[in-house]
Length: 314
Image (cartoon, rainbow, N blue to C red; front, side):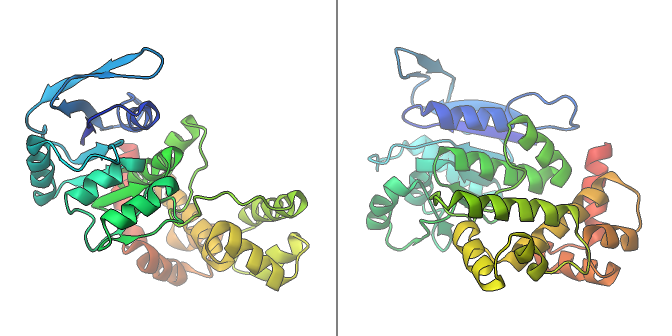
């Protein structure tokens, strides 16, 4: 799978480094890992901070690739290099995927690629983005949005979360978590989480975190949200309110996601039957497991295993 990282106009070192770490770092232990190029249009050398510099291959046409990554783009720039414009649009029209980090969303918006899509960028650029692109559905309070074709993310670190989501969709849960661990990242941060880190009461946060850790270790069909709230020493009403505020999802959505993560991992790494996997993941039975896979993954457990079990064992 080929990836091209485009340096546009100027270098943003953190975002560029994030893209390189995600997609260009060799991972020989993973079969058929990404093959990545870094290119630019218009010039090949860029000044960096603290008297540093960066250079890459200059092109007039985008190399053929499956995934295009835009680490950043100057917010003030509205005139796009014609060669870059035509190359990126051709890549999209031919079925290629594109993701952007932070201010890179401005380039996607200028090209019309975010029309009729959800968009986001760093919160400090939100007002500017809305003013310039009032026709685009902008969401400020999310980490990233990715529909399988076009993706954009908020601040710098959220680009890593988006990248992990791309890896998850390409290679499966197990490999995505392996990459996340190498980056010392959480295994998964939902794109709908807030960009803004609320400062909760330390005791409350600790009790909720401990309760969630406990829940993951005790997944079963009998486990309820009331059980988790009790473990956090909260009333159900207080727990629901706190959870929604800080995690931007309901406790039930969180619990279903954890069960599916366990099921995906078992499908990728074991030869267990569906009934046994359903039991270990906390579902009532294989029928319930199949239903939830179809509902949230748009794929059956057997199809998932055929795809990602084969990737892992390739």
